[in-house]
Amino acid sequence: MKRTGSRHYTEEELLMHFLDEGTPAAGSEISVHLDACDECTAIMQEYADLVARIQSWAVPEVPEGIWQEKKSILLAQYREDRGSGKQRGFWGFLKQGLGAGWNYALENPLPTLAYIAVAIAFALERTITTFRLDRILPGASEVFEFLRQVF
Amino acid sequence: MSRGFAPDSLGVMDAMSSPQPDEDLVAKTLKGEEDAFSQLYDRYRQRIYSTVYRIIQDAAEAQDATQEIFIKLYRSLSDWNPQKAKFSTWLYRLATNHAIDCWRSRRRRHETQNPDDRKENSRTEYSMGDAILTPFGALEQKESLDRIRRCVDNLPELQKKVFLLRYFQELKLEEIAEIEDCSLGTVKTSLFRATHSVRRSIRRIGGLQ
Image (cartoon, rainbow over all chains, first blue to last red; front, top):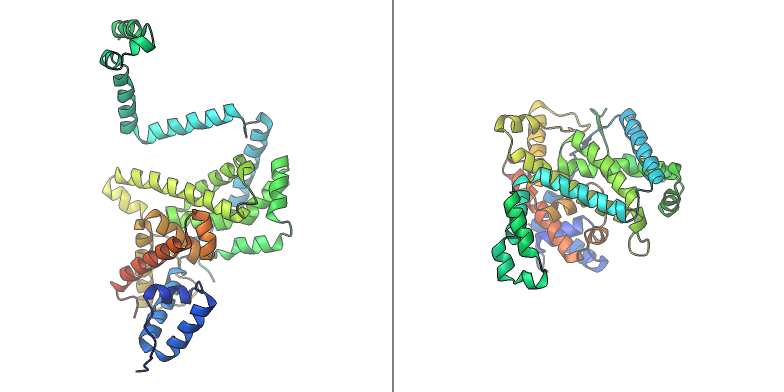
């Protein structure tokens, strides 16, 4: 086994060296060490094999026809958005926000119900009394009373 | 002969064959020039799709997510500041964040799904690459790719993004740090941890010496 006087490098340092992500100075030091150290060379080799294996994970090909079809839909949407001025502005932002909120509610019905329950609880008479909302919002009790009669 | 799988470099080749810089295309897209937006789409669609696919791990959903990313792209294009980040960096940030959101919804759906359906949906879509493998070698490679996929799926979000951007988009770590808006040290640690997890997972089947 080859021996070296310098310290062994950590696996992180070896991986970064393999990926060519270290500084040039550190890189040349590690290269010198690797020439003399079987142990670190073996770890480096293992990372090289691993990265090759990782990169063999390919992606299913999408036929060109599908890309073109999707592009047509996308460009039509782009034209429509530009035409209606949806791209920017307060109303576009508001609509987008409400849409996102609605999507969230559909995906997370229980937390949404919980938020609604908290909001209703906040409007309870006790809350009005505790926080003395009557002083801030005259008529809050009457509104609550009306809601209680309705529901 | 590849078996129905495209290399990630396709998008890169598209980019190389197009002489117009991204900045020009963005400016034209903002002015309403459809052709410029169409060129941006052609230039980046494959790279975005391949990153999104590896996060979501479902081809149809990855295609839909790619489409949504491009819609988000033109709607928020005016937010891009060329002084702060390259266009591709900004686009990758948009894409990986959207893909992670899709992956979260998909995971939530799967958690509430019947176990039999889940098994069916998680059927693997692999590439064995172009190498000619013995039946044993092919089986081993299939098993190791399966482990890589599962391991990547279970990585924490930042590790997953760093891992995919480094190994498949071959971005430099500094660029990834910019995309993820974190320090280079954090990116290095995340990449190492992610790679180490995958290595441990493959080692269990004796895939590495």
